[in-house]
Image (tube, one colour):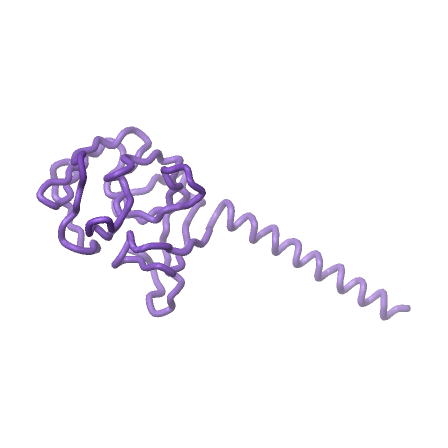
Length: 178
């Protein structure tokens, strides 16, 4: 009889450990840190389809995204997808695309990370970024390369899921995102 009590006691301990681990995993995933998988070529050459990233959700309410951050945003078309894009401008900035170059507040951006050397635009070529908004672009600036603020405009800060900061797969590209 004693051995069955020991087995039952051990099982109860294991269930407690597993339960606590699941609670911690839930809290991490939903409030602190999440992972996402890149789907599409809009951030090429920086990120490719299948890349797996860690996204910081914890500091977002206190620390707004800065220019150059790679962010995960809720799709502006209302679908249940998220997009990965680069922050080009923040509240108060003016973005202009002229002669294939991106200008923020009248200064040309140095963008060594983009695919191609020409940023396409259609229709509108100047945007004022409002309070609590950001302007995002994909790194793939070839025609049709990225669905971003050039087509859907500025993004409200509350649509930002988090700031992507680390690629953990593929292993040969393992490291901090820039």
